Structures are given as C-alpha cells and as structure tokens.
Length: 289
Image (tube, rainbow, N blue to C red; front, side, top):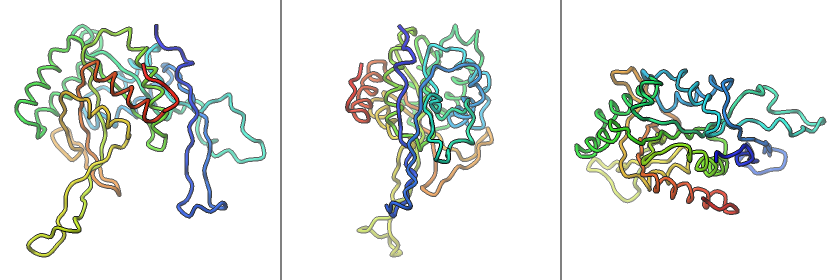
C-alpha cells in the first residue's frame, strides 16, 4: 500500500544562529515543514531541483518534473506547514515564500524500456547517464558494467533526493523511510541516484614538496550527508564534474571547493539497508522498514 501523507510530515529546525552564541545574536528559527505527495502545481519547483542533477543537459526537465508530479502516490515534496499559526507579535521570517514553494523533493520514477516509449524524458535520463559514464574517469570494466545495466533497464528505478542544504537530514530520513512503502508499486531490482559532493584541497602539515610548499590532497564531503550511505552500499559508481564539456556545463565552485556529482547504482536490498541506516542515524527514535 502506498504511504499516506501521515507518513511524511515532520518538524525541522532551521538554525541561522551566529557563531558568537550570544542570546542577542541568536537567529534560530523553528520552522514546521510537512511532506505531501507531489501535485502538478509543484512542477516548476521540482524542475529547479532536477536541474542540480542534470545540469545543462538535453533532458527535458519540465516534462520529467511533470511526470514526477503526476505520480501523486509516490514520494513527497517539503512545504511549510500551513496549519501552524505564527505568533502575531513576531515578524514572520518566511512571509516572502508562497504557499506553493517547496524546499525539497524525495521521489522515484521507473527507467524501463516500456516507459521509454511512453515518457521520452525517462530515456533522456538514461542517455545522459550513459554519456557521463563514457566520459568519466571510471575504469573500463566499471563503464562496461554501468552502461550494460543502464541499457538493459529491465527493472531499474531512479531516486530523486534533493532539498535545500539548510534542511537537516532528519527530514530526508523520514521521507526515504516512507518512500520504501511507496515503491511497493514498482517492480525493480536496481536503483540509481545522483549524489552531489564538494571536493576541497587539504594542505598537509607533515609532508612538503621539493620546493618547500605544503603537499595537498583532495578531500570530499556530501552536500546532503545522508547520501554517504548510498555510496557505501553501491555496487557501481562513476563521477562527472560540472566544468565544461560538449553539453556546455559551467564550472561550479563554492567557498568550500569544487562541486561534482557521483552516480550510484545499488541493488534493491542494498538500497533498503542504506535507508534503514539513514533512519537509525538521523532519527534514532524511529525504526526502519
């Protein structure tokens, strides 16, 4: 049975407090979010999140977002809970956001040969992933296995797990746990997702190069921390940078470092294990499926 809306709602805290820790500078705001099954009115907002996964690509993001929105019994979008009344004496810090504004999406859609004929955007996703795999630095054997799995597409599902980074992982943990119930309507053996990371150069304090400068090594962190569990349970993976190429991608850098995406393919049982670990880690009061 698909998960009902009661499986998704959660309360999260947006912490904008300053580093001084003083009471007068404490800008912590408690915000109530609710997870609702997507609807067609969410298409444009969902499209923005999909753009983080398929930047400057030939994937019809608007059509793909509509397909996700129309599958109203799978996944959730995160919105500000309209049922919570604001203190009339306090200024509402969120008044600039419309009621339809979403702050994240957790959903999934099928990537099967039958679906390709019905929904061209699904085949465009596979074409995009295959192209990125071919141009990646993965080994020849990894490329062959990944592309073979993507092309077979017998029982493959794509996971969308995106939100504003300021929202804590707890909200994703609860939504992913509920999504496991929704996915009962799909028959699938594998699941593929795109995780987003930041790569930074870390200077070594003990090693120096011949010219006397500090040696550097690459370090990476997940923009959405729970996605590390997907990586740990992956059977195959490859990476692609957001730095040019035939599709005209632009370099994406932050103060922390250079952003890149990692495509992760998991067997169904490994995905379930990853979600259970995410639930245990970020919502210790909850139990996984």
